[in-house]
Length: 431
Ligand code: MEV
Image (cartoon, rainbow, N blue to C red; front, side, top):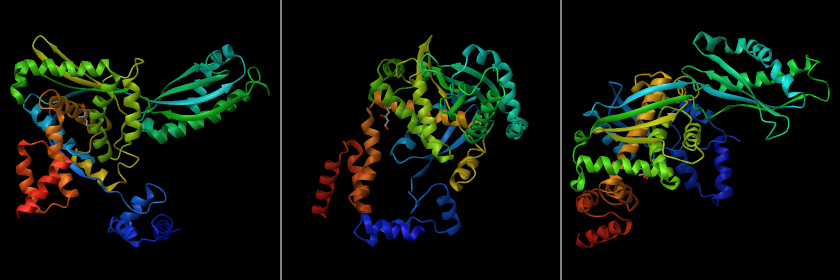
């Protein structure tokens, strides 16, 4: 079916033929046909586009460089919080980052019913055979300084009879590397079968190798970055509610510790971090599901789900940091295909993948700082509901006059759906 046919079919089947539904969906088609074709090409069965707000967080100083950060997020107050935290740290030296590693991981899962010791014995030779066998596939990446970095045979027989894994480490330079890694792993599968077949001493028809699957791992603990901020405690300043720097540092660091202790809190704490991370990941056309999966797996690496960020207050110095495995790309995938992703990357100065790791992780840390700062001072609702007020007013079809008087009215009052409803009803009665 063409897109129009799909729309007609859908409205007939699910909306009783109500054409206003398809009219609304058509309003979100891109005005340029060629651009709509690009967008349609990213997925399947597309009938329209789903718009999301594209916002800017200014004032990020990261490793001595200023950035204006694009963020795609549907939740109010996230961009404001990132921008506020960026401005706060701008006058305190900004954010520092350190790339700890850039290795990605891929796995060839297979079953082998032959002799384990023999397999282990031939593995050094097999490894060279596999690496040589993919030299054509890795040629371009090797020219850029990447390729297959290591291969390891892992024996899982004790957990699943005959199950082994070849785990590879890959350097994929500025690309996220999913296609590169998966192509190599699939080729490894073919080569492994051939190698075993050609070694009559370790394989006969009863002791065959069965390839189960070949796929990258989104868990990349060696593609790792640390982002941090620090200043003297007294430089933290004073906070709403008369909270001084020392009390703030104490409450803040306790809040981080709570997220280390309690998985219920850690989940919300890390969700706040991913508010920032996902927004930049989306804006730059990267894969937020991969990044979320990796971050949460890492948060549970000690057998218990914990905070991704840490805080220390030692010898009068407040330090707040995050360690995060993060695999992103600035070439390949959607990064150069999606017109908005292209603009985002340009706005960030066309960064390398490692520089983008620094920016994204910093925004996550900034978001976490802003959330905890609100939580341990004013509470989250004050700022959050102020922002949410605009959504409520839009939902209630408030006129521009009502919006401006509501903004004034709720400056020092608690925002809630019913409070706004009753304010609008009263203001209507009065006028
Ligand atoms: C809301 O989207 C995120 C927060 O709940 C994060 C947190 O509690 O740290 C405010």
